[in-house]
Image (cartoon, rainbow, N blue to C red; front, side, top):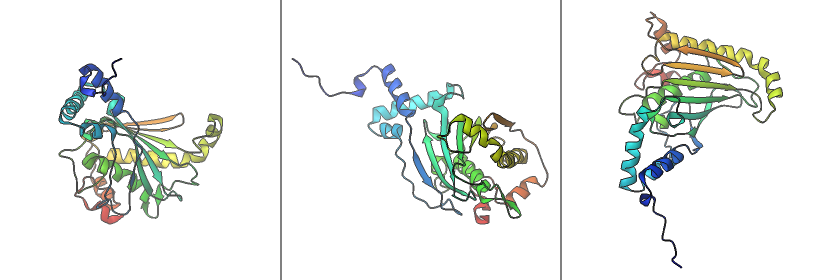
Length: 263
């Protein structure tokens, strides 16, 4: 009886290898990024990404994976291989953003066209979107997390900017309240409790779209809460003074603006 030799990925037909690459790309990551506010800068973050590990295994696999990622440009923007998934976790008092947890990183950031962001309000009495005299640190954290991802990728590190910025077709914000393990009937009963916070977040997103910062970076923003869905298409609108007012509250756009100092 002839014993089988060691498994060799490169011995498989290319079509099967590409299917394996797709499966690896869609593996969950659960990569935690701690954001020591007020500053994003200087934090060392090591991420164990399955497809990146595979790419570094050997030159042939790395070349095939790079070529495969370039083919993603032909995929529909709804394809899950181009969609990042991230959990946004506020502090216990709901006043600011504490952690960013990447759930799925299926491709390099420049191939990404969609980000689904789950904003968790479980076990928090109230999410504070309005602060004293202006928007809260939580809103600034959410906004700057998108800003830094667009310009720096998943590391959110201004010392390691991307060669050019990410262009997302859609950002989907899923507003989650109540215990995720509750039955749908229980969650439905809790929806009115969080209606005010949902409206505050919706008003902020509408204002951010109208300010014009996101034009050329994000095409559409969708906010969902239960059955309530709000959508804003990002279009260029010149609004005198609006940009300056947002920058005053720490909502500057880009990684060279002084918004971090306002936190």
